[in-house]
Length: 409
Length: 168
Image (tube, rainbow over all chains, first blue to last red; front, side, top):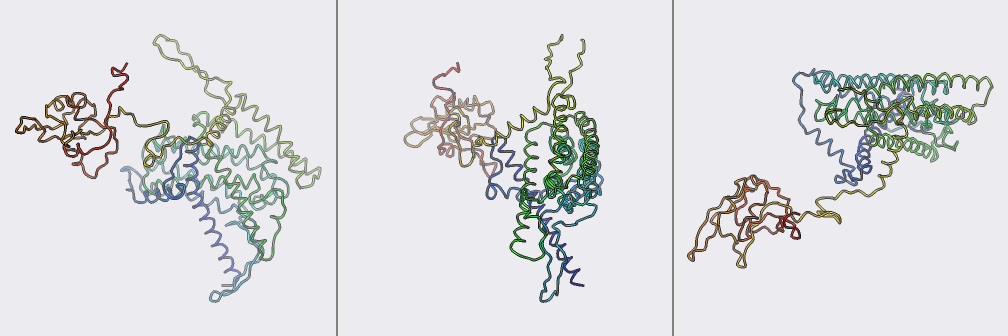
């Protein structure tokens, strides 16, 4: 093997291990935050017995679930029943492969006693796979998540599970469109489909939360629906459908769904941070953006601090997810469809046209591609957001319960 | 409506989901900083604003006299009145003609904790107790014999409020 290939393999394996560990440990911590956070939101304490502050509670629960009996519903499709938990778990892990999580590290060239020379030319991007089609990869794999849920519901051969799966498929397909449409604006602004360049453009101009505020709002709502979190958890709906698509699952197979849900939550938060909040960008400094060619304390600090910035942004969104979950009640199915098809999708389409026009005008006026560019777009966004919120608030776009039909008796 | 159906006035078209949702978010966020009302049970068993009621009817206790003998005179009223039929009493008589229980057993699994035994007892011997931690390793351990009943130390139930005996 040439030193180049060895260096590439080393970097790839380390990055895969890093991201996998990040997500798995993240899942444990997020579940803990969810349980403790929901408890605090409800004036309770939550699990606080196992380990410091109850941090090891999830490990204890995982151990319990491994020990538990696996049940196989008599009429279940064995193969799909077994496959479904894995299918729902894998896409959310795969999505993280294209998300850059820190500033690039400098190249290296070193020799180990037995293994020989390792080299890596150019800065090492801190992303598992810096795909040129990262954006399309995200759309493809976030759609794939619905397969796990639908197969789980269908293969269980149980009515509750099936109803949950039906709802999930309708919901996730509906919101997938709004999700993709809102990201088109990000594409317009970036002019590229790589997530690294999405971050680079945000460093150059402004965060896209300013340049594409409405896209952020639509994406955020659609992301709730995509992860099947309250107020969009119709697939689970424990009050109506027991637990929906995973009703028939027990022990570790159930745990896989549970982990998948939180992995998806983390991934969606990371995507929100990447698309709209500059990824690993530290605001108001250019220090974090310099590309270093030699290893130094500065390079390592740059990696650590940008990673911390990414982590903080992600954590904020994770918390918002949890906060919303323990506040809002579930949508009714017709309200869900109404919001997806009649509100988010048309808004996203109108928004694409508006933003495309704005970008075209700005480019033809040769506005410099720096913070002014973003701020002008923000100024375009403000009336759009106000109009959208006004429409929502007046109940024209999203209505509550209709007047009941009066029946004469 | 003819048949007394309660018709809810539901908010119609004009209701704002957005504002209600934001208000809800603010409310839950406010609760984040309130102290938890949780009582951490095995460590704390009563809090400033909550103690177990003195009228709680839990597992039984037999009171004893100065010599440490059960106050029970084996009159047979408690097994007679017991609706769950959980008291097993075999009376005995000593040389002076005093009646005492040879066997006095209460099956705490069958007991419905009505407190009639305490109420009917002329000697104020058998009582239901203010006690709720009854875990055992063995089902047989839930048949309390006389020795065990006498050995209980938890407080006994007052059954009624002394200041308001008729429950008015």
